[in-house]
Length: 272
Image 1 (cartoon, rainbow, N blue to C red):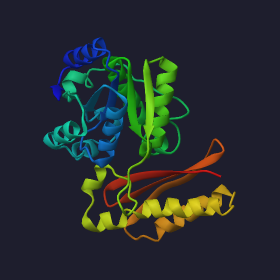
Image 2 (cartoon, helix red, strand yellow):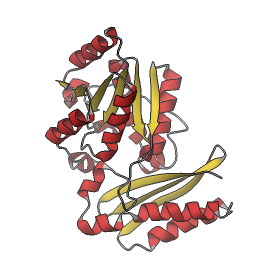
Image 3 (cartoon, one colour):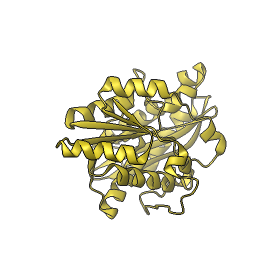
């Protein structure tokens, strides 16, 4: 696996792969890689000739310096997982290389970035869209792999690609869960044992809402109330929001909750 930490070197490495007629797969991450990231890399490896993983903790998408400072980081473990999963390239730039402290440009994707996480974390998706756009501009034509756990982020990235005509195919990959249903997340590493034991309540709440829909309930407020009730029954969890959104001919259930100082999100698609 080739490791690069400058924009110029990473761009040159991927250009060289395309000269050899290898399709480039891109897996953008903020590090603290886990089994969910591994699944993205492995799918990219199965579908592309050369897979690049990017590791960059994006300061533009954090509102609180404390949250940025406490974000988990283990560069050696990240490199080991990426290489074991089959990545050919690892791009791990420092903030100065990405120029986040000097950038005067921001990318804002309207509508799909509003509500849910957009309302709970003002400016978050603007930070995401700005750095993802920069990574796409650096990487060039590729297939980019994102997990459905961050479903609203996925929608923002898709709209970004469509509106700005990036030569990028966005590939959505299913949420990877632990045996108890908890969606894998880098933030899970910050949970205490007691909080980790309580965290699957998010998935149980989504499943309870899904069961109401599958049983014929069409009052979405009632379904949301079911999600709220399940989370409320867990004393270690503090609900941020619960929402049920029509999606095509089905629905997407969303939940966000605090466990101690850690805020977790999850979502679930329900078909009619």
